[in-house]
Length: 177
Image (tube, rainbow, N blue to C red):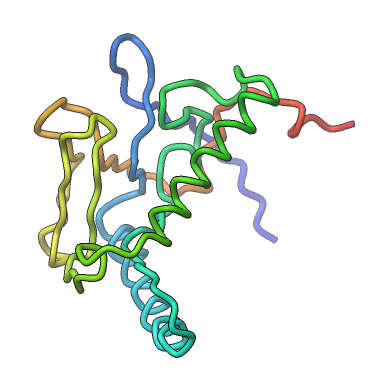
């Protein structure tokens, strides 16, 4: 067991309208992101044949990468902090997100069945910025912003995830009894 005595840092979300906001992709650097995407692609290729034999319409492009800033803080996509929500608000928020993801995964539409060659795509929460890259070498090396609103869409921390301390308030689900 390694005894790591380094002090952990907190991820600082970018600020908009004097409030920190949710970022779709937060990783150490571009190399980490490419490695993650490459691993995801391998799993995707392995599972695709199984799903096809079951005759299920499933678009892997709609699967969340789970690389967003909520890994490091409790800022939600709509800008609120999870710890500031009561249990009912939290339940409604997560059920709505789940329902939207399931609807997106299950809706058959010809545009969703096109075999896109993009290795990465990201959409801004402003609703006007959609960006995609078809080659790993084209993924930005530096922090990437939405051309329409200026929000950060890809943020590189230059530190490993395990060096980042979670910055969120406690809620009844995380308190020890």
